[in-house]
Structure formats: C-alpha cells, structure tokens
View 1: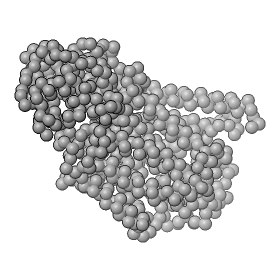
View 2: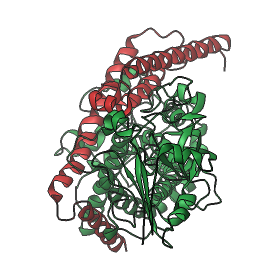
View 3: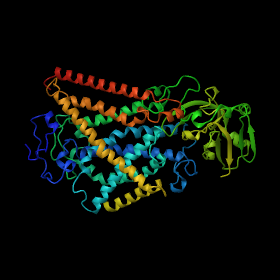
View 4: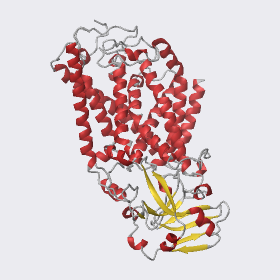
Length: 446
Length: 145
C-alpha cells in the first residue's frame, strides 16, 4: 500500500479492490492544504500531459475554423457602415473579405452554418479539456513569481472568455439573453480576447505538446484498452496524479464519449441549416420546426405579428417609392407588370438556420437604373416595421443580377410573414439584410 | 519571453473588454466573466464529479454478469454525458423559458423540446444497453481472450 494513504476511501478503489495505488512521485502530499488544494485528491489515472495535449491539438483547427467563419459573418454585415452591425465601425478593424459575385448564393449559409454547428460541436471537447487540467487550478503555491502570476491571470481570462464566448453564442441562437449586455458585442470583442489568449496559450504550450507526443507517441495511447490503461509518467506540470486510482475508463473511451456527444449535437442541430427533409431531424435546434408543404411554408426569424406589421399597412394603398436622382412610385400591380426575374436563393440567418426557396421579382439593378441612382450609391431598403432601421447595401450587392425585390415565392405571392407586399432578397448576406415589408428603396450618394 | 507574451496578450484582452463597454460598466462585465468561471470550476465540475461518484458506487453494488467483462459504468456514463450536454445547450428551449417572446418572434411554441430531449435520452440509454449486452455476449462466447 502506498504511504500516501488517501484521507478517505475512494470508491474508484472499491470498484476494483485489491489494486493498490502506487507511489508515483517523491512529492509528498501537503499536510497544510485542504480539500482540492491537496494534490493527492486528484486521482484520475488518465489525466496527464498527453491527454491534455491531444484534446488541445484537436481544438486548434476547430477553433481556427470557427474564428474564420465568425469573422466572415461579421464582415458579411458590412460593419464599416454604422447601423449595419451592433459593433460600430469606429472601434473595429477593416473588413478583409466579402463574398465574390462568382460564388454560389448559398456560400454564406455554409460558412455561418459551419460557425454555429462546429461551435456547438466543440463544446464537449472544450469541457473535456477543462476537466483534464482541473488540478492546475488548485496547484500550490498559487503564485510562484511575476511570470507565474501573469500566466495564472491569462489562463483565468482564457477560461472565462471561452465560457462566455460559447454561452453568448448559444443564447443568441436561442433568442434569449438574460444579462444586461448586447450579446453580439460581447460575442465579437470577446472573440478577440479569447482568440488572442488562445493563440498565446497554444504557443506557450507547444513544447509541452511536442514533449508529450515524443515520449508517448501522438496516437499510441489510443491503442490501450481499459486493462492496459496506466497513468502517464510523473510530470512536473501537476497533471499526472501522485495517487492514481484504478482506471474506470480508457483514454480512447473518454475520447469516444466526447466525440459521441459532439456527433449527437450535430445530429439534433444540423438539420436547421441543411434544410429540406433534414429539418425533421433537427430535434432540438431552435429553428427545426416542421412546416407544411405549401409554397410559403418555410421558417421566418420574425413574424409580422412580432414586427407589428398588419394587413392594413400592406393593402391596396401600399406604394413602393424608389428614390434616386428622381423618385418613382409603384403599385404592386405596376411592379408585377415589369420584367420579372426568377432566382433560387438562400436565406441564412446569423443564428445558423437557413432555407432555400424560388423567388420571383424585379431586379434591384433595374430599379436603380430607373431612378438614375448616383454612381456608387448605397441602398437603404426602408421597411414598414415600426422602429426598424435600414442597413446600408453596397453597389456590388444590389447590382448583382441575383438581387431581387421579390414579390412572389414558389409561384405565389409571398405571405405577410415572409414580407408581403415586397421584400429584398440578396445572395450571401446575413438573413436580416433581406428586408421584409419594403415601403421605400432609397439610393443615397455615398 | 513568456512574461512579454503574457503582457501583450492581456493587454489585447483588456482592450477588447474596454471596447465591449466603451465608457460603460466594465465592472458588471468582469462580474459576468468571473461568474462563468466560478459556475464552471466550482459548481459544474464538482457536480458532475460527484454525480459520477454516486453512479460508480451504485454500479459497484450490481452483480457483474462476467468477470473482467466490459465495465457497466461507461455504458451509463456515455448516454448520461451526451444527454446532459444536450440538456445544458438547449436548456432555454427545453425549459420553455421565454416562450411568449419566442412565439411572437417565430410563430412557434416550445412544446416539442422537452419531449424530444426525453426521447433522445431514452434512445441513448437503450442503445448503450444494447451495446453492453452485445459486448457481454461476445465476452461469454470467447472467454479466453
């Protein structure tokens, strides 16, 4: 039996009686410390630099993809125009990417769907990674020197920022944010904080990862079943237990469980982004509700009722005024009498869900020419929705031949919830740029 | 070198925090971040560790169908972990928090989520049990492995 007799019998040993825990280190348990601050209470035999390294290395590419798709979404809002995003242009970096006109109209749906789905799928890995380093939190002495203190603060900030980043992402997706903050702002700047600390952490820990892989093999520990699972050799990082319990799960067993959780999240979530019959599989996704088979039976982010748009506002008296160098007013009949353009376009919400439908209407570029829109003008589509501002749309967006003022969907008039009498529909923009219940198209000199 | 890197990293993080609340209440935001750390490190982790201990104790009392066979505990852990994670991620929907607002917004009630989650949980435990039964049967067929 070990000299480090645990202070109270551990049930892990009860499971496999007769297997003594071995003395693995010359470090003696501190008699002064209490509770989790005693190193000997951290007994999981699978904790160690290899496991933490393996989880960390899996997270690096996933976080990179989430960060890039997140930035693409941010820039897809054209945040250089005040009012396009809750993050103002005055305190932001320049937009470095916009979807080229040659890219298919579902490109944003793919990047944003990836951002949300992958973001949810890494949660089990993040939690497992945090579990694997829990003893570090209680390591004593709490602070060794100035550099050690800074590293502790930066790790605390890293953990805090990853938790807040995922929490704000989930809550925005579920349309519920209890705190007194703008979730989008916290999510965006929080991502810069998290990203910086994550890169810093990865760089600093790279030697630890390389050492663990060199000594243990990058994948070799995955070959061990439960009976071959042994603790890693003693480390100076404080992850390997000095008083290990008998294993109850192998490392690959843990990774299978974490990966299984990740796949389960994909299964209940992805259908709302892929759409079609897959929406039926999105059992827990916020926008996975199943609709009927009618031409207007597809999801909306905001109903007309929520937007306080009533049938009275959209009746026969409705007129669309298009304002450029001159102003022209159209009735719905007049718009329908113009050359109609038919396009299959995807609405993709920042929340991650998307839907692809067949739209018919007047090309925005046609309307721009009709009113002699100034060269390089930005377009603002004013909605009937009370109190709702209008985003600035750049010429490359409204001059795209796919960009429509849609009057019909799937061969019938669009319903009130989908933006009757007319809505804007554009390729590769966040869903809220497809303004519904349009009353005015204003081409403003930039 | 590490010292310098940390100073730079923390400076950028501090700048980001400052941006979120340019002129606003930074204290409130820091409390939010700290609350998440405390909730995870001092509530969530001890809670699932404790739950795991209770489960292991319960499972240890069960008769083992076969010596050296597959461990029962992991066939409880896996479905419990997956179901628990789904519950945490989709809790605002499953608990029908904020349903009135959600209905106005989307035209849907949140009635389906609790049932779906229970269904998924049941399927996960059933599948895990079936896999366990298969493993035990295979271990019995090949006792000398």
